[in-house]
Picture (cartoon, rainbow, N blue to C red):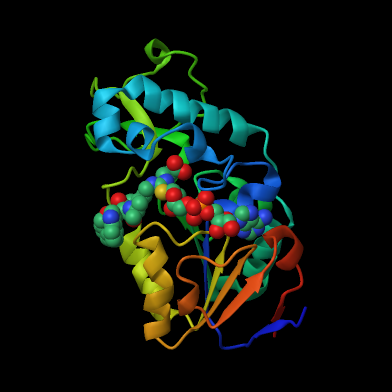
Length: 238
Ligand code: BV8
């Protein structure tokens, strides 16, 4: 595989999706045996779902916590952490994933734009910060309460809710000369628009995954393959 140069002046923005965690054993969303195969989005990942059946939402996210608790970073997570170590503050990682595999691999300068499995937050957004919470709730009556008395919910961005850290993400995209997107179908916005924003700034845009994403046309390079096999050694950082 021909290596892709990262020059001494390049600034890199990386976006990852569920595909980068697939080789760590975590299900993606839209694969035939994926997360959504067992659930309807509307039943587990919307504010209405939370209002209507919070127990079902916690059942879904508790199962995700259990799966994530035994997953380990794969060579793709490690390759990105090594790229960050080489580039320092010329590297930024935005993940759509809610697992902590990037952190476990050594990534430091990152945001989780759709939240994190290992945190819970006040359902009323009372102002109390999200709390570290890895509990796998067997039943809804085990779910704790916020200091304000409201129920705790997963610290997850549901459909219809505003993604986290958007001002920081926008600023990093505006400064990036290279955008690397790994393992995402390009089906959810605004994440699927990031590549278009990068192209507006004349950035090189590279996609890595086994099948072309829905927004494949916006990429200067589409490299087909599994992230854990293709990413290590793909980029030559000068
Ligand atoms: C918002 C929660 C306003 C955490 C998630 C019409 C047009 C534009 C927008 C909309 C629209 N209609 C509705 C919207 C808005 C909506 C949206 O996009 N809906 C979709 C369905 C059309 N978006 C929202 O509501 C968002 N909020 O828009 O607010 C706003 C906008 C801008 C600024 C301020 C406010 C909030 C969306 C967040 C929803 N929460 N997750 C969780 O449960 O995990 S979304 C969830 O699905 C993920 O977080 C991720 O973002 C998304 C897509 O999943 P992927 O990661 O791409 O996974 P998928 O299974 O789809 O694909 C896996 C890929 O991996 C595949 O391509 C596969 O080939 C590849 N792969 C497989 N194996 C490997 C691999 N790749 C590499 N290596 C491998 N081994």
